[in-house]
Length: 261
Figure 1 (tube, rainbow, N blue to C red):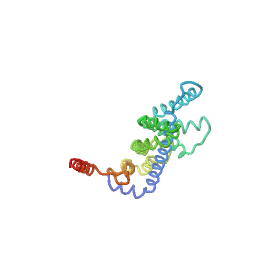
Figure 2: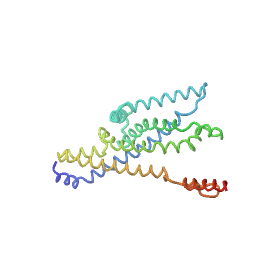
Figure 3: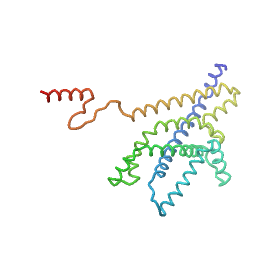
Figure 4: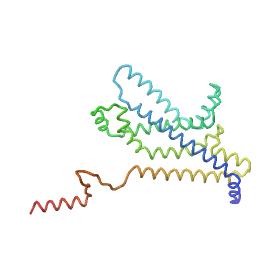
């Protein structure tokens, strides 16, 4: 590899690299957010309490079957195949000339939603059943329980996994070059096709991918630490600050001496 060529490629094509990186981040971010929304919705539906008999049970089973098919299909097939089927299939079956960015967002969103739905379902199941029973005892229905009690805990618990899914989507957007989406990989392929310096061009792209994923990871970890709160905190109660453990032990010992005297 000639380092001078790396510098030259960056100087001549930095705008294209920047545009491709922005498109990659945009698709990955929006796709992850929409996918998380899909996952939350499906997770709530699939954990709803169902009557033992009647039309409601049959309706729920039908909806649950369709959702299970969606999850298994999109988890069981590669994103690159989904991109080809959705983009070109829509054009052939329905004569729809789909916008490439819209198609990319749709593909990443439904693919992410399939994974996030199972992650959310697992997060809901992990919540202690006593919290559901307590919510029912004060008259909350399933949706109110999810909104006010369960989902705040679930979102906090699945935040690391969601961040990991975002990082994966940043890299997986490269498969969207099959439908000519001008993300970073497609842009780099065009640049290398013009200068015939494939190694140097993709070396620059690899650095950009690393910088994006590393930066996103650090930001998400900072958000996780912020949501966890401080390691040491004091609760207010009975008109005074809660004592720390050493102070509480000292107070108990002093109280014992006073009783002995």
